[in-house]
Image (cartoon, one colour):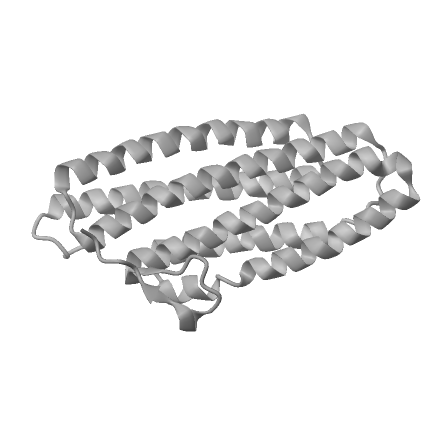
Length: 236
């Protein structure tokens, strides 16, 4: 972004707000990683760290939103910069929601282990989906940091692999619970965790879409393929 404006202070403000969004993303990445660990080995300390991260992430979302509004009011940015600020604002909202889903995963993991001593759940599909969602979040944040639209575009189909892994997991869990009714309560906790992981992947996909919008002005939401992308409507 540097060098785009004669007003170098505006450049600095845009770079600073981008940096803060990426810092928030790093917190959520850690939150998701800790939450996934809770599914296998929940401890009060790890669960507490996930909850603490939620408070930090929520505070950052509010701070960033206030700063974005302030910049728009003071600077009245032109189309490209306005797209960037809108994309960053939407990114913070999706990061906060991904953090909320991470809290659900951590709590469900803790509850599962409290409800049952069963350790033979067929969780391989859940672990695969969790790893994929975490990786997609990391890649989406990296594409945002580099304002790399081609890389962001390549991530738009990654959530299909997450959904496929979770579909297999759900089928296995239904069979397992049907054969062992004592495992139903803990199994339901795992199924709720699976839904939260799917949503984390969806929020990561949204981040990639916002990067494409910020850099190219293309609104790729709900597009089934790159060939159907249409330019975003021009800013008023």
